[in-house]
Image (cartoon, rainbow, N blue to C red; front, side, top):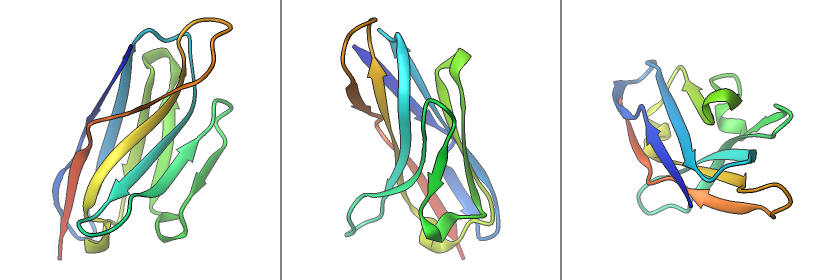
Length: 121
């Protein structure tokens, strides 16, 4: 079993910054792709940013140039640095992780519990 703990959310004024963390623990041999998703009230969950095991990244258009995803494999942690925040960034942010628990095993997907980000105007 793998546990994901997200942290770093909070209330910030427009133009401010936050850094989200997603720390994985448990039965982990390797972590492959990791994505940060968000869901605003009444809206579908959407992918915000993703990073592969080879550190290739991609972002949704609305956050390009403002958000940066990165990973620390030694700590099994992925970060989302969010700058120049806008009220429309307000949502619950979730990380989704692909984990190989043991050598030769397949991929298992896990979701974190979510962390609230609120941007006031």
